[in-house]
Image (tube, rainbow, N blue to C red; front, top):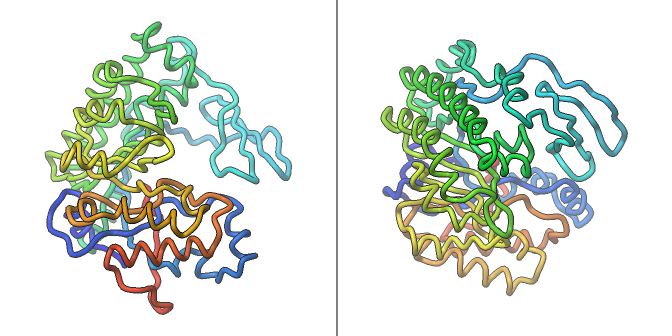
Length: 374
């Protein structure tokens, strides 16, 4: 089912809503479509549309707040299994074609303040960061029911992309002036861009990508978040919020339990994908934080490789009345559908989830799906 922006915004801000939202956040991992095809999947199932997942159409607002450069990446080496290239920041990136869709850096351009100053120009404000044509299209799309979104670079994510996790984490203690200058640059660019955009169109949702946690916990703590992340987040969010924005959403995998309070103090209203394997429990979080935080995801993807009884237990717990009747939740798997997930298990997961949520049975004449991670 296609939701309108107002329906989605009301759901995610604990307003009135007609029914729960059931989605697929990311879709299958590489290789799973081939597994399912061998198990008899239809093309509509491979394309995910057969499962009639809910979605809201969204549109960008023409704002570019991240690193920019017109130069294409330079391919260094390419084989059937991998590609190595050098990007505009000077990083050597390797994409493993058979198992991944995102290339990973083999080296990093920043170790010192001098290194940062050499590439800082990619992050500073310039007038062409606002696409005026796209901005006008966004205003029209919003009137047609689409969600208008804007993004800002992650605070820790930018440090990691430039310095790597080890040196980046140490820099908070050993090079605080470097971290401060990176944050000041991101803040200046984001706020100047968002101020212009918000004069023309309401940004419904501000999004930020961090991925700053693993199974054992986050890579930075409340002190670093308060000192370096909070001023940046609030500067951007206050502009969007005061102009009518309603959702400030952060994407971070891993266990963020130790820093949820600090993140909420940064202005965030929504977090995802809430990975159970890393200790994230959406029911426990709802009991602790109530309407302070909405969420997306939270259903354990690994359960789908077990049996139907395990799927039942997971869904009956996660989709209980506390969650489905109060809003502020988009139900879905906590990340990509893993390889080794039997097609019959996935079909059962969708069927059982729809039953618990009170959604109509699947109808081959009714299609719907759009990746809901954004």
